[in-house]
Image 1: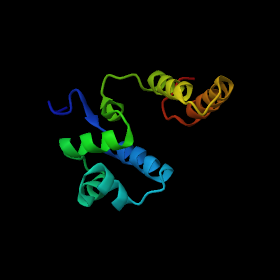
Image 2 (image 1 turned 90 degrees about the horizontal axis):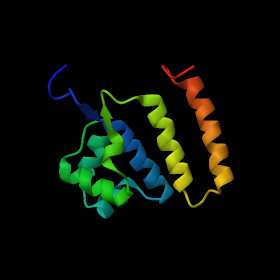
Image 3 (image 1 turned 180 degrees about the vertical axis):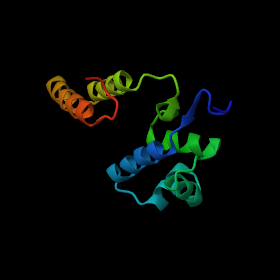
Image 4 (image 1 turned 30 degrees about the vertical axis):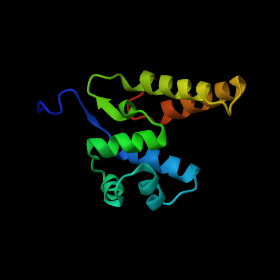
Length: 123
């Protein structure tokens, strides 16, 4: 493993998918995203191709979408399953559109689906 990849990597595909969800929720075209975020259209094209944005582009897009860049850093020593489900539960409980009961129900559904579909999840 190279020194560059020893600690982890940025998941550009997941970041692009999160941006796309935000774009769709806001009913925007990609050119609108570029304009509102203050990035070039080519930055968004590169992201769509799985390439990483430059630091300034990343900062602008994270701010525009109200995301955390850390959510897209994949650490090599990070336990995936428990961490993923914990993050999902945290987000569901923080969603003001959901009652606590609805968050519980969604969390249970997601946990079952995750455990059945994950390639190396817990039994």
